[in-house]
Image 1 (tube, rainbow, N blue to C red):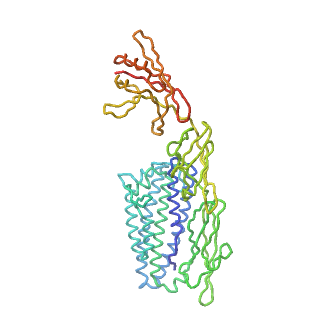
Image 2 (tube, rainbow, N blue to C red):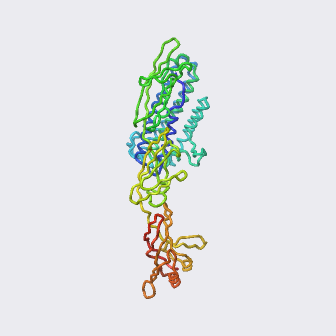
Image 3 (cartoon, helix red, strand yellow):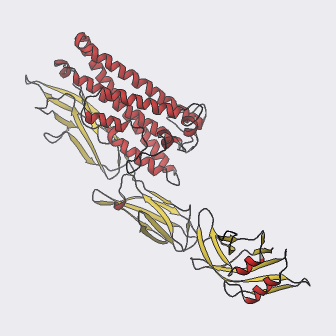
Length: 520
């Protein structure tokens, strides 16, 4: 029989998954990131199959012991049956939700193993957050019930806390404080289909891990004697099945229920590990999925030995980096463009970045990009220090544009004395117009809030003869002759402010749209 040992691939993989999810939900979702999710989902699926095989082996060991000793083994087998039944019910619900999400995006022929519309942002919300079916809420409640049940089967408090953390449905912030948003909304609202499916696959991995820990706890409670020795199994427990190129792959090669006074000899691809060691560790090179095999040689008290085969696989993926403009989708030349730069699994202080066609500098937790030439691409390249060496994580190309033209306005005060901007198109009291200093200009849309300096303008008033009287300004101020024009205007007459020139923070002076003032 087998007993629980160490951390499983799920323990490290869950950390990787949350980091990858956060990186994916940046401003733009590239096809490379979607491909990364597909690769991680495939790796998790294979890991689930391996964990399921391990759990089945433990269950079969309990069945075998119960057949040999029904009086002693039946109670443990009954509890194991309850665990397996509850697990299968929850996994069936998760599988059904995965299929429903994919079919909501791809149609009735949708297949979770071959998602067509991976970037669909509506399918997961439509299935799990539908107020009519409450599927997300039901899933959360079933996870909570399953977690409570499994923890009750495990006496080890450390493993209890591990299970509680793995199957937690609390939505916690970076500082560990609870957020008001419920678990199902935090995980499935407006998420791409491939991200939702990967998260559900990760949940299956967590459930299989919890099932295995509970079954192992039951097996540890059985004094099986020689039966355990006769059912020895070899296990490979990697810290993670998916690793970044250039980083280390690390795995424990263990034998369940091994005699602690004697460690087995371990051979990988025909080569022995160091004596007394059970850690298989090496630096990864090219990307892809690789497998390896080996065996454990166990010595018995009578001098004989037995050989126990094992095999495993691991996935190496390319380093990735997320570079996004926090204020806009393009970079504007001549101004500071706030940027967010991160890399999965890498601390901010280990990340460096450079930029072509301009400068890139740190600004607190963010970055400031300042492109130089309009119309020339700006390439931001991200590097990070991994295991003491600098490694390129990725790059992103941005187009650079000239700032759009600002809109002119007259700074006034409303009836309550609050500052306001008059942009024409409606009557303006003559007294309010005379109280204004001059003309201003700014870009103040949803993305940008940038002030421009008005250099000059002119006012045009039509006199009683129908002639246009043109008066130039005093820079950005109304000249005295212009003010005299305003005083002579009757109600309903218009002042057209034309030939407006304004200079932006990029140093470019441009002609902008006129302003039509209706005097009330």
